[in-house]
Amino acid sequence: MSAYQALDWIFTHGLAGIGTLVVYDDWMDYACGPRVNQSVASLRGGAPRQREAMREAVRAGRFGGLFSAGEPKAHREIARKHGVDFRCVAGACGRITSPPGQCDVHGPFGAVFVVAGFGIDVDRDSPDAGVENNSPAELAKWRAQNRGCAFVMREKYTVETSVVQS
Image 1 (tube, helix red, strand yellow):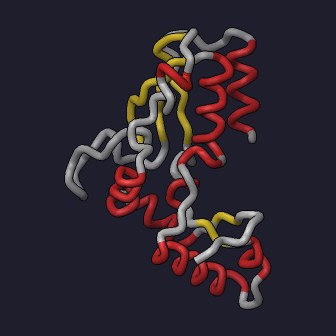
Image 2 (cartoon, one colour):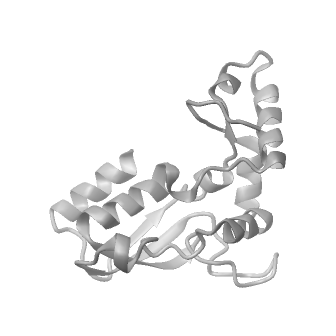
Image 3 (cartoon, rainbow, N blue to C red):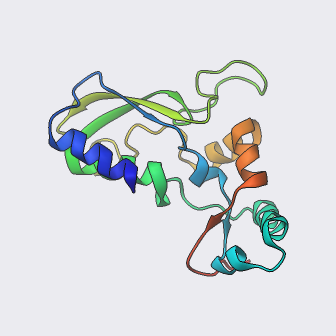
């Protein structure tokens, strides 16, 4: 978890303050990447079979929770550990506010947050660490409208260690 390690070091050493921007480039990989079981990684037929298994998972609606892994998980853990009040500024952390195809500050694939303060109880005061689009409905809307998300659903896959039940 390189995002966690980097952010932990920055906040532990007091290098981030109010107004600091935190940018994630692969924020939505875990929300857009369908979950397939570990055996898919070693399927005979290589990449074409892996992509087909991923498409099957997309059709079945098998997606992990936003905070289950990667940058979103690291973000929330850092917010909790250091009491950081993050606010979504732009990108995949915000709700899509424009119709598909129109310019929207929350359309980009990455996520941009600003540090708004310190000393909060993330579980009580800001349970989602500044993330606005964390509900299943908002994530489904994101998946349907975002081109980057469509790419992830079509071309990448995320492997779990346990078998996904259909």
